[in-house]
Image (cartoon, rainbow, N blue to C red; front, side, top):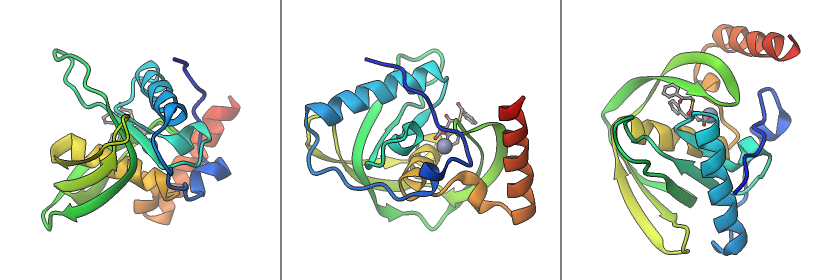
Length: 168
Ligand code: K1U
Ligand code: ZN
């Protein structure tokens, strides 16, 4: 497995739409493993392939508590097949927008269809942090960052801070 570099906004790849994978073969399974290792190394709870410069529809998430054992979920071609009308507000962060946080409103629960690491089609129903994280990662596959939900003023403030920190 390998720890890969994470792109930081405003990198143009982060604004592009990722392509579906044809099949979860050995290459995609290895990509999923590398993404899990990269997510853990960066102390994140999720990661999408575009964040490491790969425009394919692959995400990984793990929202396990500190006192629980790791529980990574690997998803290719994730698709929201149902979302609740009820919404929740959650403070979000992003490994591609380092050290910046903001509240985002999203559906509280979602049902997601995806291909797992063995190319099996699966569905998962998620709520709480898992639902927020999966929606955040699927947004990455569509070139959307959490700052895109904020006012232009707040978004520009955050992106300017990130660029300043990157230059320092
Ligand atoms: O996609 C990413 O950049 C990963 C991101 C996932 C995420 C965090 C919070 C809400 C939605 C999605 C992170 O892991 S940011 C770092 C982090 O561990 C964290 C930040 C805020 C709240 C909880 C965790
Ligand atoms: Zn993110």
